Image (cartoon, rainbow, N blue to C red; front, side):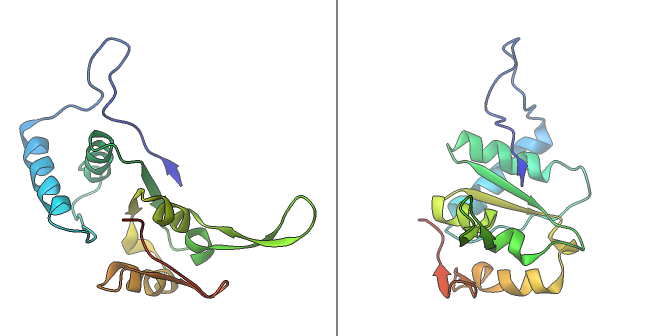
Length: 149
């Protein structure tokens, strides 16, 4: 995952790290309304470098939420999201949760960046999480993970 910047902080000169232009203010209002309308995922579309990710990071910071960003590409593996079995320091095989599972359990906001580039396998796994079921099935552990309220 890519670490998110806390845009609610100020620089060493006391200036905001996030500049609210009139268009960003309007977009922030729209995003705030969408987030406040219910516990559903929000899809943001727009051109590259338009500020979508930064806007979500800023709103999360202002609302006191931690934000986790997952970049997708054509080689993204579902284990990056859900986790996998790996040997621990004693050589014992144990399941290590992926970044999405950790974020869901801890109630963090999740940005699925460049989701259009993710392979079909990843999109299918996310389908139940993003629809009305709002759950993620982990076949490795036979566990159903629901987002933290």
